[in-house]
Image 1 (cartoon, helix red, strand yellow):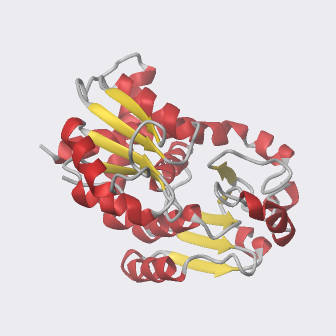
Image 2: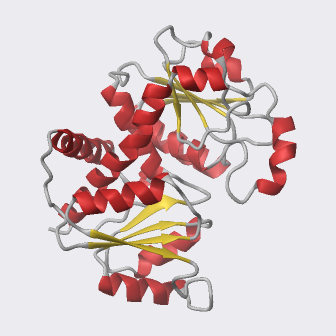
Image 3: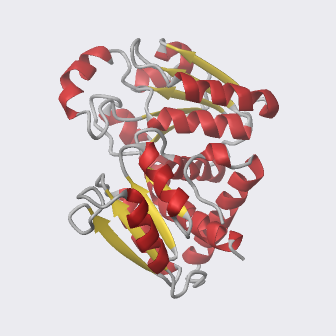
Amino acid sequence: MRHFLTLKDFTKEEILEIIEIGLEIKKDLKAGNYKKELEMQTLAMIFEKSSTRTRVSFETGMFQLGGHALFLSNRDIHLGRGEPVKDTARVISSMCDMVMIRTFEHSMIEEFASYSKVPVINGLTDSFHPIQLLADYMTIKEYGMEKNLVVAYIGDGNNMTNSWLMLAAKLGFELRIATPKGYEVDNAVLRDAMDIATESGAVIKVMNDPKEAVRGATIVTTDTWASMGQEDEKEQRIKDFKGFMVDGLMMCLADRDAKFLHCLPAYRGQEVSEELLENHADIVFSEAENRLHAQKGLMVWLDRQRG
C-alpha cells in the first residue's frame, strides 16, 4: 500500500506512470467510455481547508470511476474537536477505501497516514500540493512542452514552490524560482531537491529577480501572493511583491512559444494581469480540468498497488 503525501516519495517512473494512466482515462472519458475501475469503493474527503477545484475534481472523479465520495468538513466529524488524529484515521480507514485530506499542517496528514489502513492522498497542506503538480505536468505533456523544459516560478516560496522543486528534481528539468526577499523557498525542501537533482540532472536556480527567472523559459507559472490562512498579511504582501506580477511585458522575456500556467484561483492585477491570463486561458483552464483526470489516474494507480 502506498500513500501520496509528497512527490519526494515517488520515482520518476512512478510519477510518469500515474500521469499516463490519467491521460488514458481522459481519452476514454472523451470517447464516452467510462471504466468503473473503483466500483463500489468509497473515498473519504476531509476538508479543513475549503476548495472549489479539489472537491469538484475528486467527487466527480470518484463517481466517474464507479465509486462514491464523502465530503467531511470540521463540522461533520470530531477531528479537531477533541478526537485525536490517530483515532479518526483508524475509524475512517476501517470504513472507506481511500482518504483525501486538505489541511494546514503537513504533520497532521503524516500522522493520519501512519495510522491509516488505506491509501491517503495529500489534497494540499501548507508544505506541499502534489496533486496540482500532477495536473500541471499532464498539461505540459498535452501541449508538447516537456522536451527541453525550463519552468520559471514567480512568487511566494510556498507549498506550490516546494512541489515544483520536488517535480523538477525527480523528472530532471530546469526550474528557476524567483521570490521577493524574505519570501524564499524552504531551505530543507531546497536541500532535498538539490540532493535528488544530482541524480536526475535537474537544474535548480533560486533568485530574487523575476525577469532573470523568466528569460528564455518555456513555462512561466505563479500562484496567489497570500494563501489561505495568510489573509491578515495580504496588504503587506501586495507591497512586498511589487514587480512580481506576471504580465505581457514579463512574458516577452520568455521563449517565444512559452506558455503560462496558474493553479487558480487567480487574483488579476496582483500575481497576474487580466490580459495575460485571458491570453493563456485555454491552457490555464485545461490545467484546471486536468485536476480531474490526473487525480483519477492517481486513485487508480494507488488502488492497483494494493493488488
